[in-house]
Length: 361
Ligand SMILES: *[C@@H]1O[C@H](CO)[C@@H](O)[C@H](O)[C@H]1NC(C)=O
Ligand SMILES: *[C@@H]1O[C@H](CO)[C@@H](O)[C@H](O)[C@H]1NC(C)=O
Image (cartoon, rainbow, N blue to C red; front, side):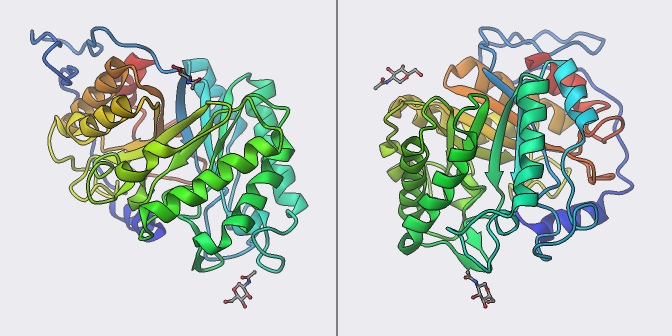
């Protein structure tokens, strides 16, 4: 999710969003799709698809209220509901991306490389254990900080501190193979090269901590957008050099389908915008022999968006280079936010989910 301001705007502007009656949804990803039109809704057809190894949903809440540090549990922030995790596991999901607020884990009093707050770490561990042990699923843990700590950008000058943060966090989870380390949510404004260097330092630190089996996800600048990956973000020019002695690091990108790509409007640019916005990133992954993880996608529940999401998922699964996906977002506090897929009645559950997401599980 791009900004807190965007989130607040979304929460207040979509309370009365009317769901559009469901049209027939066809995957519109490329020429290999058939083009017959059936009179009744059918699951998307996607020929030659390879299922994702990690089929996920974001579980937001512990990063909420980031203008109040540390904030209080239940007032400013909340951890995912076990019942929500149960629902998605039952549906066939096997991955949960769980944001947290870095200053709650590493208090500003002692800094980014300082000791962890035991209560917040304990709650994070409770969620990790629930997902990985009780539900035998994967959890991607990620500081939802946009590479900003205590109000300032984390710069390359703080590379060692940032690496220490990840060394310490990986140490906590090094024996749990189902934990995925997602280095930093949506850096922006900073140079791609600086963001790359900070990510590389974190990858090295995680492996040095003895966490050698787990998947690591790195994100680029410009909110790690797929649509700008090879273009103005500069990410495409530097992230091909990512190196991991244990060869288990993937590139995480995010993609929203509204006009500014922020996920704050339920209106999609077109019914084909999903595949259009990720196609070049797919080619880039292939050219560099890298794997991708589409860690955030979201859109409104209307005909254009449903077709666009389905088309994107079909393309991702046909490409063979995208190993994971996660919808933005589940979480206990979304209310009527149009992208909420939180059971029992998040607005994305009624039509978007069965028509555009579930067929790809
Ligand atoms: C956090 O920000 C506050 C306010 O700007 C500042 O006084 C404090 O020194 C900062 N702490 C760290 C560890 O940077
Ligand atoms: C890394 O792993 C991938 C499979 O995920 C494999 O295709 C590739 O050859 C491996 N590269 C190295 C250097 O081991």
